[in-house]
Image 1 (cartoon, rainbow, N blue to C red):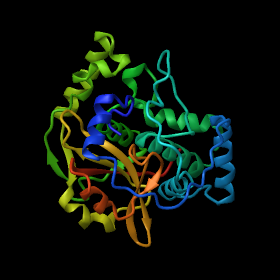
Image 2 (cartoon, one colour; image 1 turned 60 degrees about the vertical axis):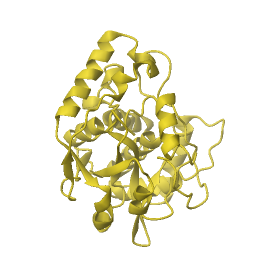
Image 3 (tube, rainbow, N blue to C red; image 1 turned 90 degrees about the vertical axis):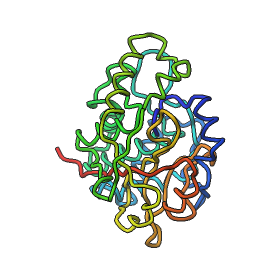
Image 4 (cartoon, one colour; image 1 turned 180 degrees about the vertical axis):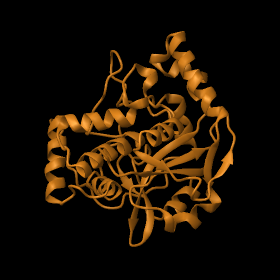
Length: 297
């Protein structure tokens, strides 16, 4: 989700007050069965064994993403999972997810399986490529904190294609400055240099072309959505671009929303369609859609 790196009290209170992450009902029982003593490496190995048994090797990325998402149903929601002490480094956490780390991990795992490169090192390389600007870790500010940046950077890297405009997206304007206006919520923004770098990104995003499929038009595009399409919920919250993320999963011909909601506490699938879910969120003004691309090279 936008500024997913720090699920600050300010942000949590806002989302809970609006019920932004509510309105979803768990569809299906937990299938992952995480053991508290398991390491992330062990969980990864177990997922790869399951994926091989499920014949997911070399399958399309989007199809594999939703298969993984279903496999992870019931996995706990975990805030602050990327905020480990010390210098910025790749954090691997398969024991629990926030809304964007669920997307990032499913996308990374699916890209590994699609390419037939299924070592833990391969997975970490994919996760780094997706999570950081240009696919390289260069400090806290290189992490793609705003989902608008996440989408654009991963489109440049050939990981996803932004299909929002092709689906009838309309341009809108907004000032994006949540991180610098809530500096105290981010321990890494304790120095002016980091704040200045984030401010540069915010100015660039605010001045660029922003597109969304308006909430009133989401129902009309459901038939064009595919399994694994990454969804960003555009929000009316001041200073923020995207407040929640997840992915499309088609069930009995209906495009639903597979995500890790804060209020639900675990990975779940919306009871109704993505449009019904969206219309239940007062602060949601539209959606953006990123389509996973085949792995090349």
